[in-house]
Image (tube, rainbow, N blue to C red; front, side):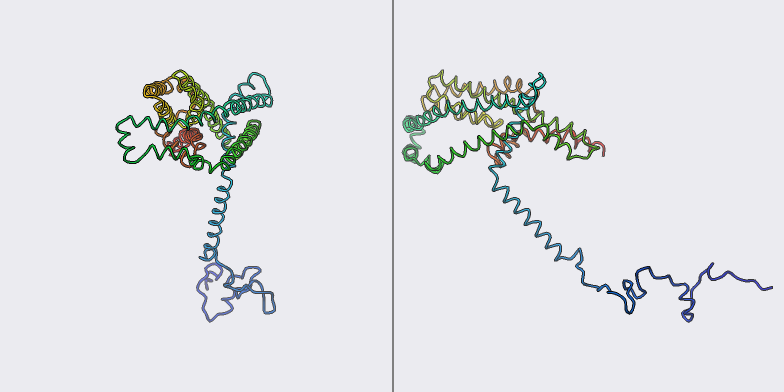
Length: 397
């Protein structure tokens, strides 16, 4: 009896090379649309074949270098454009921070039943009125007092020769004569503003910047809820409630800080004006108080700079007045640090002292007085993100 073994379909084995018929039966059929010779379906009289070697590889050094240079060029052009519109960007930043700082007042009025648009208009009119009154009432007096201060500076410097140490330095380096010639020759005005024409341009630029900043502040105050919604929608829908919570915290802290700073600097300026008027330096009181108010924007360092300024002005008049100015500012620094600041900033940002100093120095160096203004709020926002986002994520890992 003959036994039939398994067929070739059940147990395919090696096909002899001498059997072309079997080889053609076992070989896989070519894919549709392609020819056995590797073409794209074109036979002897078919259509075009793909020419190898004509396409540029994605990893080609030429291609990577070309697009890399385009990216660097784009970044450079954007950086130059940002430098060209630096003044506009600063006005936008200042207006946004002022709007955020005044927003707690607007929300206080809306919680009392007043619609947002009338509340914004009321706050803006008060702000514009205060700025207008300050400019109209203070600027002429400020200018005359600055002129009096500059005119009396040579005599004050000459009186410093009574001090033996200063007299020795003056004998060596002729300090009093050089300073007197520098102030009396008009070189100070040339140095600060570039002459009379430069001073006129400076005043015009300040007025234009103030008007534009006020207009932007009104726009930001009226559209702040819409701006917040745009920020919220930049996050994924699943994380939007969390982003809304963090953004509301940041806006609240920044607004509270700026509102508190307005109170602190107003207190510093008013008390400085009263003190200088009491000790018999009323002719310089308003000018010095205005400078103290501006310096108080700078966190931590501003109070020390104000003390140096007031003490120097007082010593230029007489030694007892200088001692009184030094004692006053030493006492006021403690009063501000332990009474005014904690009460005003009780619900505001809580930024450690070293972080405040580093942020103020870094932002002040980069952006000037605007950087000093936004240093602490920016540091507070970063600390909120650090505590609420980074630390929980690290704890879960």
